[in-house]
Amino acid sequence: MVIPVPEAESNIAYYESLYPGDFRMPKQLIHIQPFSLDTEQPDYDLDSEDETFVNKLKKKMDLGALQFEEMIDRLEKGSGQQPVSLQEAKLLLKEDDELIKEVYEYWSRKRKACQSGSLIPVVKQEKRDGSSTSDPYVAFRRRTEKMQTRKNRKNDEASYEKMLKLRRDLSRAVTILEMIKRREKSKRELLHLTLEIVEKRYV
Image (cartoon, rainbow, N blue to C red; front, side, top):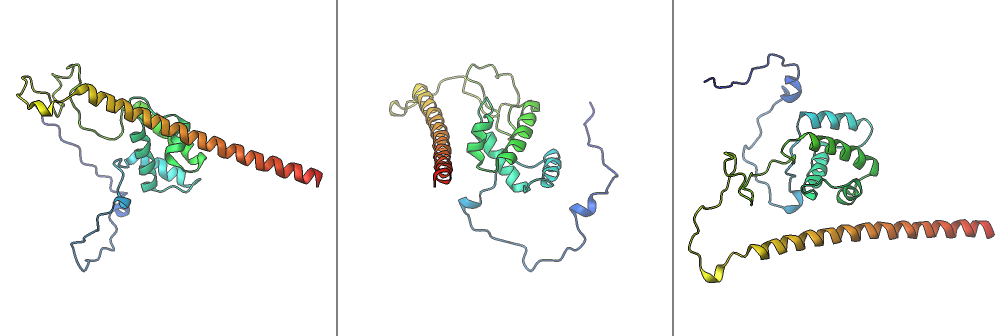
């Protein structure tokens, strides 16, 4: 049995960019930041491939690393087993259309190449059909024997599944309403343009 050990790289060309030599000892080492939901960080973390893509896209568009992480995070959390479409991505991101298209295509390619199906690491749980009982990476398993529970705390799986279905239906309704809102806004702008053309022709 051989314990795998990562190889050490001797190429330190990028060392100066990661660790600049102008370090100064701060006045205090403990910093306290106020808790705020507005400054919540995205769950998605930038990797080397993403950093290359962001640096390449920076030359054409205004895009930062944190902004890219937030966009990928919204796309991941907005998708289930099936990834969201480009039109749904525009409603989720609320950014420039050209930027959304570039990031969406990159995310779609990376998600298809990912074996786990999601770019954000999640805790692996046991499947309902019991097919993952032999998987050693499952974090939480169901008890093989039933425990005696109180009658007034009955766990109703049917009600839970109904709530999940209701949440999914409401999410779809919100998406449809957002698309209707954009459609009506476009129709209103078209009407204003038509009125301006008529006024300039006949006035």
